[in-house]
Image (cartoon, rainbow, N blue to C red):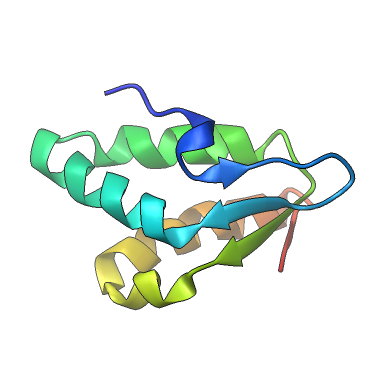
Length: 86
């Protein structure tokens, strides 16, 4: 599975990147079916490494504990590298 940033990470010049949790959730479900969950979050981490700030939207989709746990790992690393989460 090739994960493209445009699937759930939106970039606008001069603004934080926007991470929509709805498409992330859908890709997460797909990745569980085809065994590519680790790749999904590796790609997300790599994409976040290219920005300074990210704004989460549609966070109600993070009600699934397993998705939230995986995303928290990525976001914690992003923050540790100096990134800002809004």
